[in-house]
Amino acid sequence: MRQHFDTISSFIIGLIFGVGLILAGMTDPSKVIGFLDIAGSWDPSLAFVMGGAILVGVVAFRFAHKRSANFFGGAMRLPTKRDIDLRLIGGSLLFGIGWGMAGFCPGPGLTTLGTGNLKAAIFVAAMIAGMAIFEIADRFWHAPRRDGKQQSPH
Image 1 (cartoon, rainbow, N blue to C red):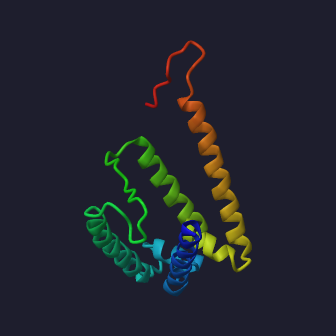
Image 2 (tube, one colour):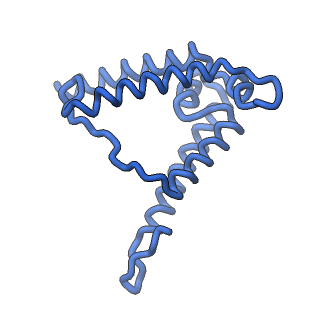
């Protein structure tokens, strides 16, 4: 029964998130690219969407750090890593380049995929391929070498 409740609540929360993305215009690649085009006909409206999301996130994390369980009684799993390293910078650069080229980031891409949009389907396929390539490369990078020494991640 607990698993069904978790699944249903996750679906409802995801549905609310998707509707919010649609209402905010985040699923329209031309609007996103217009926001990123600061040298041309810049559309600042998504800055308000992101500012609102950051504000909600800051408040939510402040309350979450004081709790040991989530609202549904499950374990509270918050990120603990705080350092800025090469992987974070590289991932951020790849995310930004992909967002600028496609006009989608993962949430809006998946939301738009539900409409049958071909560009969203190509984006999601490329995103999944990129995640698979990363997993394979990460396993190779961190795999023990034949001489028994661990490879350095730096």
